[in-house]
Image (cartoon, one colour):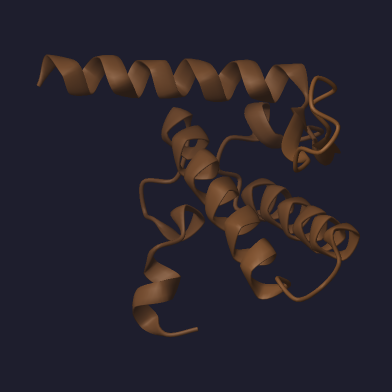
Length: 121
């Protein structure tokens, strides 16, 4: 990983603490999942999902280790699942994130706060 790639990770940002860590985490989460599916594009969907889950678990652990926001991250979980749209039997499965309620609530609140502060500027 080169210098510019590593700088793009939220957990490496100097302001990654408190409520800001929740916003950085949501960015890192999307990036992590996308990266894993791209890295394992030639593998089966099951392997892609397994590898993405491992990466999400590592990311969550990283945020706990750096003490970005202990009240938000410690003891929380995100589980990746594939869900099928029942209305169309031939549709491609969609990726669903099952986030622990406490973490989900805090992430949504932090994102809403960030959006409202940006609209004021």
